[in-house]
Image (cartoon, rainbow, N blue to C red; front, side, top):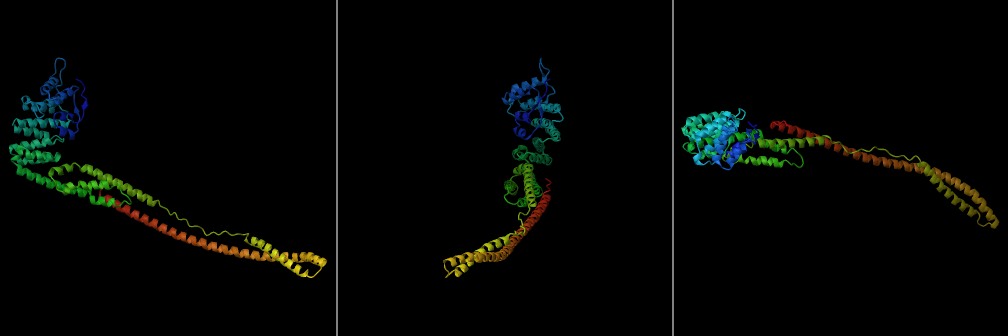
Length: 442
């Protein structure tokens, strides 16, 4: 026989009309290389040709021994004979369909639990259609014991039990069915077998709604913990980009607060993993923001620099003052010498006056220049020293004032940094406590 390659998850259910199940289930289904031809017959609503194709595929012909142990052909033929996918009424035979479904279950691999459960579920439905309730219950209970999510199995079992009058026994499978797929709430409310027990069914749904609300509120308080999420939201300083996630979580809770229909509450239960994922991502982002803030504050160092009180001393200040004084003193001495010489030369003749000017300037000039220069040196040196000392004191006082101001600024900056570090350490400690309340380990 040809190899049996895998087809896409849920494809066989989709071709048989179970579109809703096909969208919500994923399973590996094995098919032979010729099964797609049978699928095309069903898709084109060629029911007779589809039955003939499956029969030939199973029994074979003169060129092929057939695929007698391939469950997919039995299941496909059973779905056509069952009649629920639009088969022409003259072709419907639930007894033959039941035999095909039982063979499909028998030949399916142990690992393909979903397929085996679907096959038994269809067989149980066929027994119900044949009004064989004992057999239908037996087959559907066997299907229910297979660990796979097929809510229709539980619903049909409850339907059979209701039909038999065993209403109390129907409660457990019915509630299991609606817990797995909420649209069975509506099917139960409109199903003929349930209508005779509708007050009881409504009571069960009311109890289920109360129970579901209690469970959802407990989940919100213990698992989601919106109040604590708000607290960690406000621990991050500055702009916070996490508000959208928090608002989404709060908006989702309106279903619980409005105490809406049971079906809405049951559908909401399926969102719990998604909401927990959003919650955990929110916490991780907040944790990263807090860690970044802590790291930034802890790295902070003072930027204020305190200058030293150093004053430049001009060692040549006295020399420069003396040199300047010498020049000034020599100049004054020269002027005095001229005045004295001019005074003595007054009233003398030309020759006497000439000699008086010559010798007067030589004698008085020398004495004035030398004396004035020496006096200028002494006075200029003393003045230079006094001026330098005064400058040094003024500069020293100014530097001391600047240094004191810088020290005050440094103290204030160090105090602020210390306070910031203490505050961020307290924030980190509080955040860790909030994480413990959330039972979050990252």
